[in-house]
Amino acid sequence: MNCRSEVLEVSVEGRQVDEAMLALLHTILLHRSTGKFHYKKEGTYSIGTVGTQDVDCDFIDFTLVRVSSDELDRVIRKAVAEFKDALGNSGSDGMGQISLEFYQKKKSRWPFSDECIPWEVWSIKVNVVNLANEQERQICREKVGEKLGEKVINIVEVINRHEYLPKMPTQSEVDNVFDTSLKDVQPYLYKITYQITDSLGTSVSTTMRRLIKDTLAL
Image (cartoon, rainbow, N blue to C red):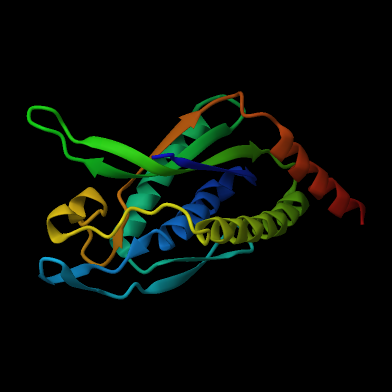
């Protein structure tokens, strides 16, 4: 199986990191989650509904749409908070990457553990910019909102391609494909990891600074 890999790049002010990451991660998970499976007998099941919730950002002119699952939201927020703290404490000019990997399990014979096979990975490269004054912060607030809107459209376009998804599992195999630990939603199995690095490049931050400079010149 070939694992799909998608890369997104964003440049944000420090106080916008968590909202920008939540917007992108929640958008992906919204399209990679189903309602809970209710099995009647092996091979026969119904799927519950997935509710959505609009969340207005405080530091970005943007409204994100997420699955209305407080449990899932807490998991994502915890991962993003850890990434933001590591980014702030790194001393690496505020550059890092957070990744959302979807995988499925392949049962192995005892005594070996199950094999986790990734089928889609989203990597979000982040560059934190330092702004000089409130006027620049207001421009950044608007520009980051516009960029997030473009990223969300890009995510939806990628997800709507007819590419590999794990086949719907039988009741005995559902835990090999979906995370069934949440009571109100059922995302595909996933994990979130991050890395802090000073080698992501400066193209994104340069673009953001140019946008701010051009806007100030108007």
